[in-house]
Structure formats: C-alpha cells, structure tokens
Length: 378
Figure 1: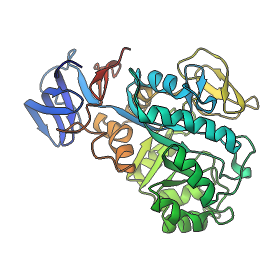
Figure 2: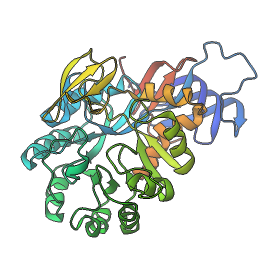
Figure 3: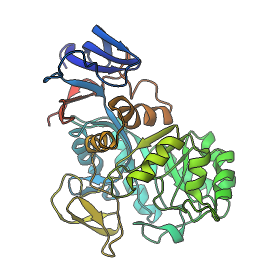
C-alpha cells in the first residue's frame, strides 16, 4: 500500500451497521457514518439497497486442510497456495490444519506452516498458526483420518509446538491420560477441542471442567445426542460456549444446525476445506488418503464424507439461507473465531483493528478482499 484507502457502503462495525466510509492502511484508521442504525441486525432499509456494497470483517477459518489441489501435509509452500486460494473467497486469516500421521509427516507440515507465520506472502491470508487435528483421536471415530492414532504426551506436543504455534488441538478425551493432560495444554495457550471421539457425555463434561474449550466439527466424528446414552455432542449442546461447525449443508442437517445455534452461544463456522476446494470434480489428496470430489461433495472411496470443498463466502450464504440475519452470520465467520483465539484486533471492524475486510454485493458475492490492508486479486 502506498497510502490510506477509503471504501464506502454499508459497514458492519463492532457496534452495528452504519452507512458511511471506512479508511484504512494496514489497520483501520476511521469509520465515519453518514447514517447509523444502532442495534439493527440488518443493513438499514430506509433506501433501496441498489448496488451499495456491504462491508464486513474478513472471515477467519480455524480448520483448513487444503485448496487448489494442494494439501497441507505436503509441507513446503503448500500453505502459501492454500492461504492465497482462500483469501480470494474472503478468508483473511486461518489455521493450517493437520491430519493424523506419523510424527515425521506432521513435522514436515508444521515446518512449512512456520515459514508462512513468520512472513505473510503477497496475496495470502494471514496464517495464525496450527490446528493439530490428529493424531490424538479415537480409532473408533476416525472419519476421514488414517488409523495412525497415538496417545498424546506432553513431550510430543511440546516438540511440535516449538516448530509452529499450535493454537487449537483436537483430542478424544476418553483415551488414556488425555483429560489429565488438558490443563497443561491450556497453560501453553492451546485451545483444546474435543473431537473424533467415542467418549460419553460424562467424558465430555470432565474434559470441559479440565479446561477444554471447544468441539471439532460439531456432530461429525463424535458420539451424538441420544437420550439414553448421550455423547460428546450432547456435552457440547448442554455446556459448550464455543464449537466449530461445517455449514456446507452436507455434514450437518439444517435442523441440527438450528439446534446448535440455539444451544451454543458462540457457535462458529469452519470449512474443513481440502485440496479439492476451488478445483473441478476429480481425485485429490487428504493427508495420506485419496478423496473424490463430485458435485461439490468430497468423499472417501467408501462414500464417507472427507472434509469439504466449502469456502467461507459460501458458508455465509448458507447461513443466511437458513434464516440467520447477516450480522449474526458474519459474527460466526469472523468475530467468534477471533474471540475463541483471544484476538481482539481481528474479526471486527473498528479503529486500530487489522484492516481485514471483505466487500460483498447485495447478493452476498465477494467483490473485494483486503488482508491487513492489501488488496487481494480475485
């Protein structure tokens, strides 16, 4: 950037919608309103919307495996390709997410992520760190993960955390000493999520009491909601403040999404995107597995769902199609994931926050994206 930029339109600020202009360089300098709609959940409707842009905080995706034919587990600059692709769909910050694998393969992936964390390349979403989705999961609830599970040890997590910051770690709380390990992981600044778990409701509650703070792709890869034998998903609905959910309308039925929205105050959305994202139908890698994309759905050869080809802009449109107002949908893609990581200068448009901005047309199609003030080529 050579100087401050200004955008005009209907702006979703940290305190609600305003019609006006936002001025920014790497960070937001000022938001000046020409019309305010305090407390409104929708853009003000006193005038026909026409082609007036909708200006939202950039999306923050805490569960991303791949894009554009590239999988994070390849290491090297795979994360660069992934972060550039997702930026074009409005994602301005993300966590590179691993698969269950041997430690050497996880190390290779984390070394690649570390390079991107140290220096954000041109056109890339900001890489905030790692979501370590495996290998500390249940062999009974692998989903699309390969059967290379191990029990977590503090020493191994510390080795991996030293390579690239682990911001989120998924584990099955019923395995070995996992629940006893949670306080130590939380003390390292790692958000522990329950997922890929065959645990009971009681296992989930005990893990939350120990310091677990979220749930990985809610409903998928975990014991569910059974009134006689409740599982991890029931613990989430009964006690969770945060949980991630994949709103591609394939992983979770709309009725279950609505249930979660009522039960979990800061339910936020992720893509669980794979190498198939942004690509035509065909075969792609997901860690050591091969997955098949057909008609927008990504599956293993067995037919089981295996991540997604979802992008965050489509996630927004899906949430709105379920009846969420635009401000609420935006919060679940931006503010709440930022809050979950303890980031108060991302996920909202306010003075001094990073200038992570997505501009939509009235049909909620992406028209402009800015990452820390840099205009992304769409």
